[in-house]
Image (cartoon, one colour):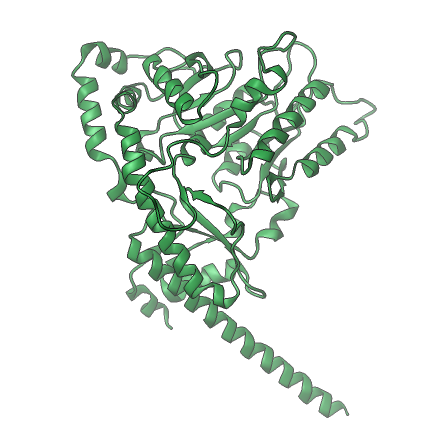
Length: 453
């Protein structure tokens, strides 16, 4: 097919991780903004500078909302929460407060990672210090991580001097995938904290569950049928909640009160990314102040959405069913058009799924970079090749060379199926080309062998 023919095809973008415009809660946000701006007691503080931790009514609403969804034995205090300008912006804030390139040696991330997160770390002077952590069936491979962190600690002195004992060897970024992992990580974080961090001017390790608080609300059964009753409670606990209770919690006698984890969420996936509003939760001593109250006016709108129940209603009656349909459609298309070609899906035994994306592995000898290029050229199809989501500069990047990520949230449902079908056409085309080249090479080798005999 020529490029001109590909351009005539409807472009399909399975890379873009945005919500489809039809799923944006325009009416609900319009009503919430009207309600907030019509009350002087709300609109006036909303339009002025806000307190450092953020708009207090929203902090209270988020605390109650989280406590209900995660079914916490001890409700979250609003004092543990600050309002942010979204998860990505707040990651930069976390790095400014809790890291120092003079002391923080490495940043460890699960690979594949969020593809926009590496530049944030590099902008905070961590260029060349990003490392990846493999995953096992339970999630982060904690044994691997502990071993590598110990290797860092055992490095020989530089210029005859051992690094200061309160050096923080790593920041850790990832999300939970199982209840077993939820117990392993805080244990490791506390061990690292006790071993490495001494004195009054220490830095705390961060295990950051990026966007998990919102993504967990976009969940549904892995298999049809989708029941009328939504999944209204979290399947897994958050690290920040486990840290509150693990071995007596951060407020136990003798503890420093800072904790080991930060939960970093936003309303981007469950309301609208343009709200640019989110929250962070840590301990009350953990620097939970956002320094100028970002998203102050938007916070008044989000407060109305939470208190009225309209946000939960949108999540459970609109988003969950819509994304579940899209997920089922994409899975059926993958099973029909890709699995017969040798594509493989990870974690096929999950009972609950969710989010925006699906990952799969291409069959050998195909490489995701090549498939993505040919898909764009021949089918006007955009997909996410694994290299986009590699940790910058990490030696394990090669492990992603056959991995592909596709998104079911942005395109219309019919285009999702058509996009997967087009991808199947690309894989078949490339297989045919590879087979032809291999056959030609074999024929040439045979001919050379005869000439030499």
